[in-house]
Amino acid sequence: MAGIGFELRKILSRDSYTSTLRAYVYAGLIGSGPWVLSILSVMMIGVLSLGIVVPELLIRQFLITVTYLMACSLIITGGLQLMFTRFISDRLFEKANDRILPNLVGMLLVVTIGAGFLGFVLLATLFDESFTYRLLVVSNFVVLCNLWLVITFLSGMKAYNRILLVMLAGYSLMVLCALLLRFLKMEGLLLAFLIGHASLLFMYLFDILREYPAKQLVAFDFFKRQQVFYSLLVTGLCYNLGVWIDKFIFWYTPATSGQVIGPLRASILYDLPIFLAYLAIIPGMAVFLVRIETDFAEWNERLYVAIRGGETLQHIGQLKEQMILSIRQGLLEICKVQGVTVTLLFLFAPQLLEWLGMSSHYLPLFYIDLIGVSIQVVFMALLNVFFYLDKRAIVLELCILFVVLNAALTILSIYMGPSFFGYGFTLSLLVCVLLALGRLSSSLDDLEYETFMLSR
Image (cartoon, rainbow, N blue to C red; front, side, top):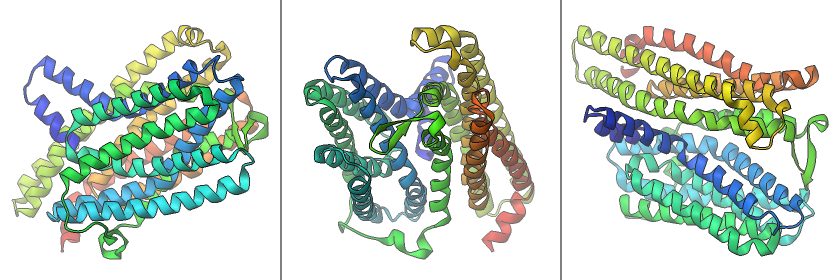
């Protein structure tokens, strides 16, 4: 994410209210824009298909299929994203830019074969739907798995205006294709979904080809033990699994869900409030990127440049204090902004749900989900700080704890009844954030010692 920080620093350097507002808007678009665009596009496809894709059950089957595609592709590739991003970062630090593209092609080849085989086996053994449906689901799954990996390059390229324009064009194309193909019922909508994401994938690959020239086409250096950190593979898997595991538990608990298509199930009671609550993270994500990726990242860089340059211990200590201050200010600002957002949504939640045609019975779950997703923004910020400090073991510990706690507390909440739904997700994040703050404090206290000892 450092590339985003460089761009934001450039905007903030103009030192005006306009430039500050522009930086926050820019950060919000970069941090949440892709997610918001994808959700809005899928929702628009569903709304525009009402009355055309008959019966309405087909639209629900399409939306649930898309949700599972997103969830499974993110969980499966989450570890690869982290591991490969670190691999690319190390190559950039070594100025070995010619190794980037061949290894990207190699990773995409591995992911395509692996995701294609896994998707084929699951669709062939668990689904009785038409061949066309199964083929489109497998194709979408492979494209999404590849797209998540390609997106890891975007922040490093710094061409953010083009990135956002391409994403807007890709999702607009998806909606347009859905309009043109909806006469094919659910298969037409899945084909539109595939065309939209495939166009994004190939347009971004085109940009990467121009940005990183290479002398060979394919390489598999990321398999070399000395050049990768396999702990990141488990970390990414656990984080994404932690985000989704409460949804899967609700989906596959008979009392809280219903079968939709094939083995895919959904929980209307649980799904709507939490996905709606995720829109509340946009302000927090904007602050997260502006403060963590500019102030903290800059002081962190200065500190390690001073250490590598042999500066005095007094000067290093001063830089460390400034870095700690930037972390505190960043976390405090995230909490303030997210707190205001949650307060406003608490006040206007009844009117919002009424406008969306949702029952007021969803309000208690919506409230606790709002708190949960807000805590998740803080959790993401803390994980990012640990990554900058190269505390991979701590991040792994926190992500494993997140999975275990979210699963255990979610199961407990189901047994306790509807009044406790959502508390598993929120409490698991709260415990992880409190533990992360404690671990961060001790890590910063020992920073100079650990840095010098590791460097020797």
